[in-house]
Image (tube, rainbow, N blue to C red; front, side, top):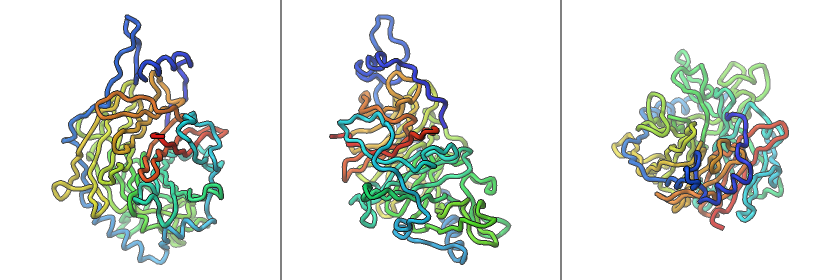
Length: 424
């Protein structure tokens, strides 16, 4: 969650800042009246950044296999989920709220239904879709958008999958609660992410999400969670246990959600707290697939009145779709940058440029947000203003679309899922 929105710069000052080379994260001007030089999106040494899966895949994978032998667990295929209208939700198309996006970039997209648009229990965070999942940009012949959400108390997380194939005919979407297999008194069960029922778990903010093949990756601070869409579980949504998460004598439940998705593995940047903007234990606060499909990038949210969050590139194994190991276990980052964008929320790359979500130049709030475009070792510039409380970004190379979303919660509703054409 973010602090209350405060618009600190009048329009004239904001325009002047943009005109002055779109300077990023500026303090007061120099005594001469000239604005200081914009800081570059600069390379930094990536050698200290690693991902470690430990034994998680064998442990969690074994528990998932055991759970799926239980008759209370009903596996369903992704295509079955996508064609099931009830339960399901219908988004509003086209965009129903002001976005601040530049008209020249041809913005379009959708709004959540009224409940998801206005709730202060759940906050959308990350975005991905079929444009990441497959080179063709389609999954089972469909254009799909997937987003991650965190619960206000960081004790639940979910992903939503929306069918954007024919948006004019309606954008049907479903929520899937993210769950973790556990052993309870020698019995296999599952629980919600960030649950007190799993002492080994950590709070779940579900910051970012990336879809590759059948895998969904969720960035969660020092943790990178891995899920598989080959393991979608149909849940019961009524009865006295409907609010529970896990197996009970009455069936399988996921806190009133009709579907659950179990974690199959996880990576960590550190066994302790991650530290943004400094050291070798980076935070993973967004994730997006690179256009070459052989790597992905993560970014750090740095809650300070300064730039400094890192954008880190990690290699992928083409055989498995998982991070590529350099020693049989660990994944070593191959490239990293220090971003001058204040409160950077997301990063994506089209193979040449990087797109960075965060504060607008000179602002100390994210109303509106801004999407910045940067080349390595050069100063970013503003591509466009964006919706307030802008979150993650995802670039789809097949179509040249840059997707994004915001998390703001208001009584009237101001949440959007949008796409633009940044190179139009």
